[in-house]
Length: 82
Image 1 (cartoon, rainbow, N blue to C red):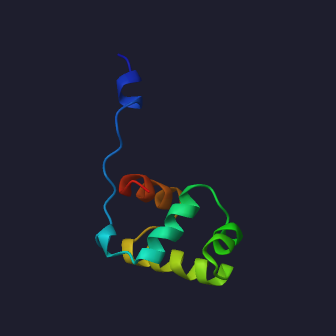
Image 2: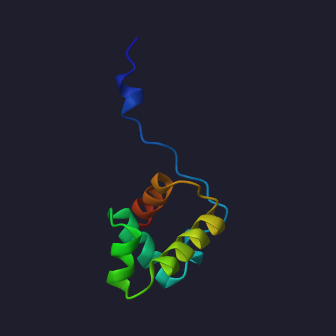
């Protein structure tokens, strides 16, 4: 019995607490930067914000969508095409 096909099967679509479309434009932009591997400080500088504002945006995204990890945030960004 080979497990290889199961290893390459796509993961099921994530279930979010609300629709990702409900994210504000700045929340989407913040998510895009974080998913690209930027730090909070790099994201803040690029967006002209404080790192605390970036943190607040990400906390709101996590609360709206029921996300608990950066990996899930990155997966969300990929699913949104960011």
